[in-house]
Image (cartoon, rainbow, N blue to C red; front, top):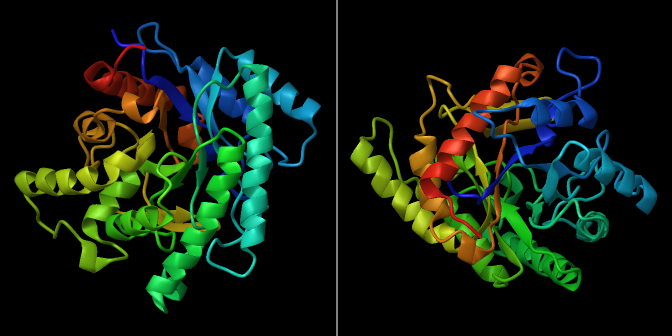
Amino acid sequence: MSTLPKLHNAMWPGLVGKEEGTDHPPISLERMLELTANAEVNGQKFEGIDYFLFLPHTDPDASDDEIRQIADLIANKNLKVGSLVAPIWPGTVGDSAMGENSDKFLLAVEKACRIAKIFNEHGVREYGVIRIDSAEFGVEKWRSDAKANTTKIAKTFKAAAEIAAENGERLAAEGEICWAGMHSWKDMLNLLEEVGMPDTLGFQADLAHTYLYLLGYNAPEHALLQDGYSDEEFWAAYETMTDALRPWTIDFHVAQNDGQVHGSGSHDKTGKHCPADDPNGKLDIVKCSGYWLKDAAARGIQHICWDGCMFPNSMLEDGNTWNTILDAMIKVRDAHGWDA
């Protein structure tokens, strides 16, 4: 049995798309940790979490002592911290990497690096990256001058990568159809190449989001599949996409997608994450994961994470949900894992 990659669960499904006063309010960090720690399949449990550094789970300006208390809380559940999500969006600390207030974006990365250092020194964090995206929601403004706007994003990303490098961290840019300049596999590749700092800024692949890359949802000119595609066409397209982006991939999310675009609350129009056993799921999770995890150890990947964004609270609160997810992740590691 392989011991790597370690199996993590994301905490942000308790926050993203959740709103107080509705039937899908935020779920506390404590409860998300409890649900994660309670999952078990044949004696195997989740080994860690990935973590969004914003309220109500974490104040990005919390004192060092408060961050250490959070580290203790996580460690007491026998969990590690892996990748951290910097609060780079408008309404958190940051702002668009393409806009006039990109200094706020860089400030968010600085705050994430500070918290990462505290976690690292505590010992609860031994691996993982800091996740970013362009924080420019939607592609219409970007399309007004695509080349110049990609250059703006790349300039901000370069400055962010320099901050990360000074702090011994790496940044992973999450490919997703809703983020300008990152909304297709080809535009994502162009951005990564323009930044040109592969040792410090790479790609985070999510099975759900990259499936929509194939369909060219926000970039029909880059579609690799058309409606009614065959299995043979799917795997040929998947190989084309992963061959292009895998060399940049330093963080990986296991997920399922039914081909729909979905959103809730303020986080709208993104790849729909589905339960691991969703009968409408379009992906062979284990086989697709193998395309991304080939040579993963050489790229410094030490863990994988499940992303259940947009799951309704009733599903998140059901322990069977997490056992099913954990079972899928174990199958991924059994098929594609390695030892230290």
